[in-house]
Length: 232
Ligand SMILES: CC(C)(COP(=O)(O)OP(=O)(O)OC[C@H]1O[C@@H](n2cnc3c(N)ncnc32)[C@H](O)[C@@H]1OP(=O)(O)O)[C@@H](O)C(=O)NCCC(=O)NCCS
Image (tube, rainbow, N blue to C red; front, top):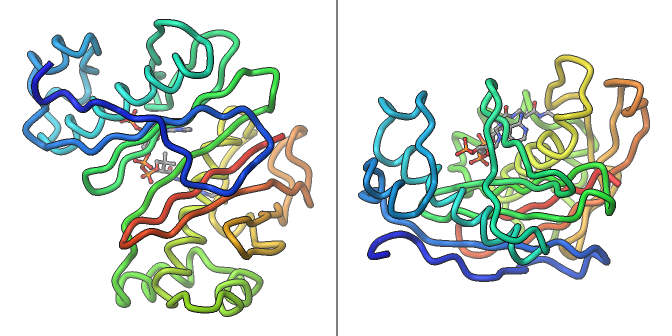
C-alpha cells in the first residue's frame, strides 16, 4: 500500500512488567483521502470528512498502529471503533490507547484482564512561551518540584512531560470517570529515570477515590515526549 504508514513494533520505555504491545509509525499529511482510508481498510469517520488533511492523516496512521498493536497483543485482525465523543472503542477482551504528535502516530494494546485501562500520549516539546502559558493550568506545586528534580531536563521539557503524563492518565481512566476532570486533579507522587507515579488529589468516581496512584513510564527523545499510564 504505497504511502500508507507501515507501523513497527516499539517499546521506548523502561520495563513495565505488563504485556503491553505497541506500534509506532511516521506518516505524511498527504495520506488523507478517502482512497487512502479504503486502501488501508480503515473507515473514515464522518466528522473528519471536513477536517484538515493533517488531522485525517493522523487519524488514519493512529488506526493503522492500533490494528498492529492489537494483532501483537493477540487480538487477531480487528478494528478499533469510535464513540460519539471521539473516544476509541476497543474490541472485546482488549484495551488500548492511540496518540499522534507531529508526524508520529502510535498505539498501545493490552489484554483487558491485565489492567483497568492504559493511556498513551506523545507530545512535541512546547516552546518556553507555551510551557509558561499552560503551567498555571497544568502544574501543581508537586509537579513543579518533580520537574525541578530532573537533572538535565529543561522547564519546557518537564512541563511538556507532566502535561503528557496527565493526558495519558486521562486516556487510561476516561471509561471509569464519573464526570468532569481537569489537570489540577492529579499530581506527581514521584518521577525519575523514565518512571513516574501520578496521584489523584480528589475523588473522581467510585472506581477512582482520592489518593489513587497510577504507574507511568516516559521517554524523552529529541523534541518528542512519550508517556504511558496504567490504571491497574
Ligand atoms: C482526548 C484527549 C486526551 C486527546 O489527547 P491529545 O493529546 O489532544 O491528542 P492525541 O493525539 O494524543 O490523542 C488523540 C486520540 O485520543 C483518543 N481519544 C479521544 N478521546 C478519548 C477519550 N475520552 N479517552 C481515551 N482516548 C481518547 C482518540 O483515539 C484520538 O485519536 P483519533 O481521534 O484520531 O482516534 C485530550 O484532548 C483531552 O481531552 N484531554 C483532557 C486531559 C485532562 O483533562 N486531564 C486531566 C486528568 S489529570
